[in-house]
Image 1 (tube, rainbow, N blue to C red):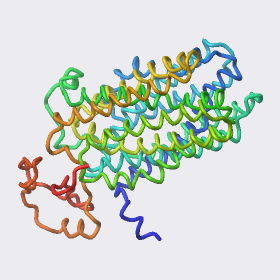
Image 2 (image 1 turned 120 degrees about the vertical axis):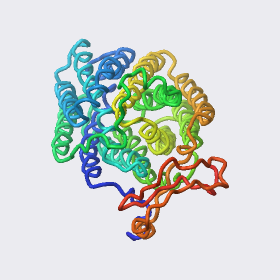
Image 3 (image 1 turned 90 degrees about the vertical axis):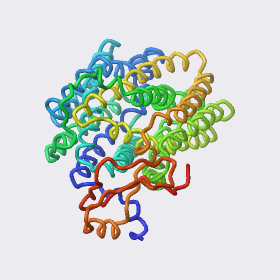
Length: 462
């Protein structure tokens, strides 16, 4: 039973696995809280849906304010201290949320959490990139999504069992558990080293945001991610409130809906990542918003035409399809950002990239919250339309992707990798039969464990 699973081994260093373990604890806490945050603000603290949406969007807005400062800090002092500080800030922000009674308190604490998140994402992504060989970065970001969603799914199930809209103490438990998991991640981080910038990635060029913004491909990826987040990820937390109020889906079933989404990601992420190796990145990326179009229409139609258990089943199918689409983001998008970013600018690249999450995460819940209050059944078709535009944009952006990054790297099997590691190092040319071919600018050095990963011509186009 174990042998067939070995082909999905992401082949990551031990330090990356330890970092993923910390992320698992942390994402469990997020899963406990996030599906129920809008419900808590609306049903327990009696905030309107519009106000609750603004509170949620404040976290993303703070990422915009603090994010530009986080990038230079990551490049100058390293990702570990920035990540640790962000974890502490998030622990305080959510840990004090049971004390919220007035809107200003909710905005203040969610703002602190958002400022911590501004440092969290660029530092974590940079540390993963530094610890992982370039040939395995797509697998590392895919595995990151597995651990995140496994934690969120288990947390969502636990939160659904704990939360009761008429029991304030149950929400206190949710927030305290979430706070503790940030600190658990901090403990794991103590055992993760920072190897620093690789010698071959050092540069005498100035480290400025201007250099980042001159990268046309990166700017295009940023704009795509903005659409992904605004019409996809940021609206996901509005699904529970929509299904609960208009489809009479119970809070326990809300937890199951989240578990379906994250469970599918956990089961399918590594097989999908493996299947994508050697395939064209941008075509794979375009599949994600294409699947989301169908997912949002199912959510909308399931609640419009059905009720209670029937609505729950259709929403769960839609949310599951959304999760399948998410499996394409890590290996196709996140890894490409890491690959095109120069080592001395990687912190700034990920900081600017995280702004796409922050800005879209501000616009999405704010606009979605008011639309949910005024025209709830118009929200999801509108989001589906934006996702369709994003799918077309992903295909159009492929012309800017360098030939060496057109395809997701393909891992060699363990036995072949071992033989390759013992072979003399020779210059390698890309397959001349490929239309993507270009000469290698320097000899290809096999990683001692993994061998050389090739995007490989002769693979069928996705």
